[in-house]
Length: 274
Ligand SMILES: Nc1ncnc2c1ncn2[C@@H]1O[C@H](COP(=O)(O)OP(=O)(O)OP(=O)(O)O)[C@@H](O)[C@H]1O
Ligand SMILES: Cc1ncc(COP(=O)(O)O)c(N)n1
Image (cartoon, rainbow, N blue to C red; front, side, top):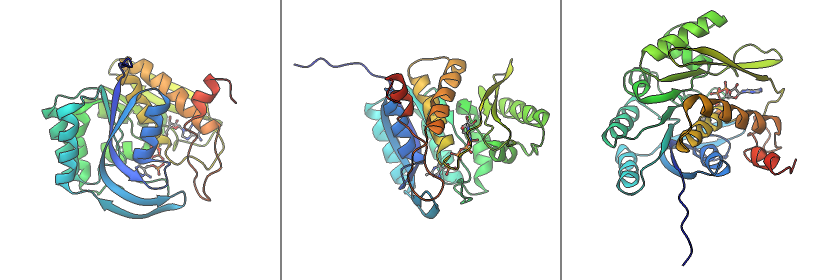
């Protein structure tokens, strides 16, 4: 009989991107590349490609709950990430079930708008995100527009971004990463991290590319994979940042719009294949 290997398990609760660059597809690719067993609960199916979102079709609330219950009865995740949660009701149900099952190591990526501008979360959902999800987050990963929407702070300076990070921490998140993809357009991209004690920046070279579809999904999935391994949030953040930087740097030529990042670049570099 073959020997069974113990593996860490990560769950993504998010929407499907038919184009394969963001959402559930980006998350599962990232889990796989980082050596973690991936599981998925779908909130909605999007008809999507690199040029935009052509349609959004939610899974029923019963369908969402049934998927979560199936996972809970058999496969306890070591870490979870949430992505596109579709509406306030879906956020409330998801948060309720995460609490009920006492799942830990939750990364909340408060996805609201796709790169092309399509709305992926209704306005009414902001309240649920603030009152139900932030408190569950070991790490919350808003981009600048999401941090503005969640805090009501206009982020037009480094100080305003720090203030937004404090507000999100005070709202209940253990660690806050305010991502810098949308912040300025200099030679560097800076993500701000706050853990309630320290405020520090992760600075990387800004890659000049239009192929950034799914960067946020991929980064938060890498964080969940790192937490699933049992890494501390600070190390998880540093490692996930390396993964996303490599994936953007070694872009692939797929589609005519905002192409996806290269999920296998990190592994290929480790094996000296680039
Ligand atoms: N051009 C770039 N060069 C290097 N790093 C980048 C670039 N764009 C984004 N990143 C990094 O990718 C990660 C995701 O950041 P971003 O701000 O793009 O998130 P996002 O807007 O939520 O992504 P998404 O568009 O997938 O929703 C962050 O760590 C950010 O610093
Ligand atoms: C299903 C789904 N989830 C998340 C995103 C955000 O990713 P991006 O901002 O890169 O389009 C997306 N486009 N689709």
